[in-house]
Image 1: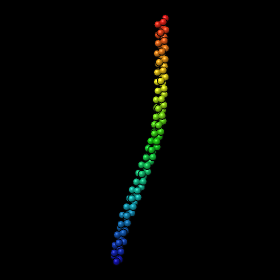
Image 2: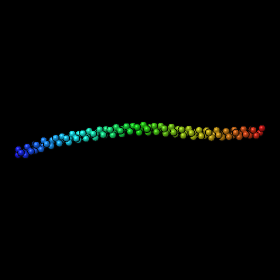
Image 3: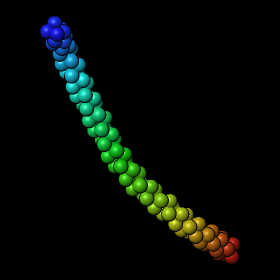
Image 4: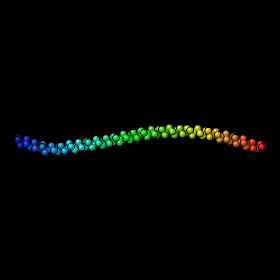
Length: 100
């Protein structure tokens, strides 16, 4: 019985350093996985903030573009009206020259 106990004790002493190495390795792996996660999370959050800022700029630029389109349409109406008045004035001027 003493031999069996001694063999079991010796076996557990030989296994203990291997078990300790497994724990150390797993702790290292867990630490690396945590660092990788934190890095990926930080990158995601940074890109999310950049995306939100860019989205806001796009919305502002779209509003500006819409306003410019509106101004262009209004300017076109004014230009067309001015062209009509110009042609009418030119026609009246031509009539005045012809009557002279």
